[in-house]
Image 1 (cartoon, rainbow, N blue to C red):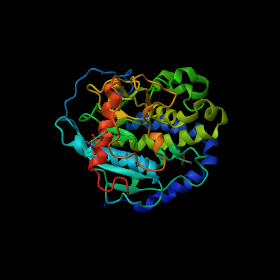
Image 2 (image 1 turned 30 degrees about the horizontal axis):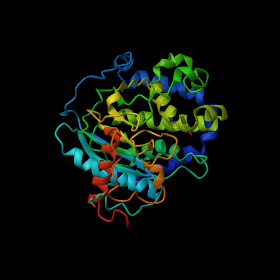
Image 3 (image 1 turned 90 degrees about the vertical axis):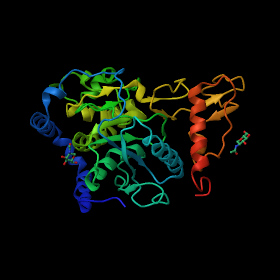
Image 4 (image 1 turned 60 degrees about the horizontal axis):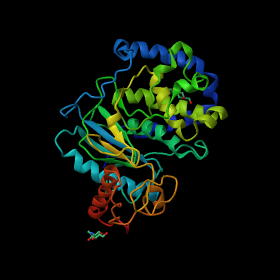
Length: 361
Ligand SMILES: *[C@@H]1O[C@H](CO)[C@@H](O)[C@H](O)[C@H]1NC(C)=O
Ligand SMILES: *[C@@H]1O[C@H](CO)[C@@H](O)[C@H](O)[C@H]1NC(C)=O
């Protein structure tokens, strides 16, 4: 279904991954080379601008189209989320103001699954056994590297999305030329981890404040830039994972730091958009924001009070549905619960009601 080019080219890279151990020794040389490459290949003047933050700039669509790419495994837990996500992609794509183009689920389980017919999917290889050390998200950069090599992508821009993203407003292209757009995460703080970050972002590259407080998703980025950043992202993430100190300090957000550092190594600065995404239950209203990210559990008592950390009498938590999809027609939360949570449940219900074989697939 997906047109391919260079379909056979993944394997040399695969071997490069295996040769990763040797890479550590040559890293200094490599950064020197990348440093040079940046100077010659990109418009350094534009990319070296101080951080461009246009949080209130209105974008009403009409921009360059971007391809929506979501990386996923073939686990049921990922599948039901992808189905909901794809439903809302199709719906929001048609709303005026959207710059959404095509869609690809980049399936990094190495083999097709039973959603191939339901949504455009490209199968890529997982990391070689053991390399992720059980940290599955390390597969993401490798999945993007393979996808960019194998697929013919019509659009010049790419949105890196995740299965637990629900589009709640038509998403315009928030990027600006060579400046990608990203959501700032309060817990990504390169400055507070200068000693560790410097292992991957040498001083000659500049201050650690060049590293944006972001992860790879959600990000809308020019395809030609992602083609440069993705392999570095993979290398940096693997090096971080293999360094016990880094692994311990960064923990579950290691791969986010991997992207933040890798993009900075290429001189890329992101436009930080707080309105890119909202995260119930902490963000209370959808408003003009674009994506609901339902990574946190929503637990409430019947008075509509948040009981976070304690299982609520009413709850919606994606982690309650690890081995099968949530039921259709989840009951709406009690009165007093924030609008963002109500919208989330309604979005999940609308998708599950309209997706054939929702609970039998
Ligand atoms: C990634 O690492 C491999 C070796 O494992 C190396 O050949 C390749 O050039 C590196 N790529 C980048 C962009 O750092
Ligand atoms: C969903 O559940 C509510 C009760 O919680 C019920 O009133 C309603 O008819 C149900 N809707 C559908 C489509 O099953």
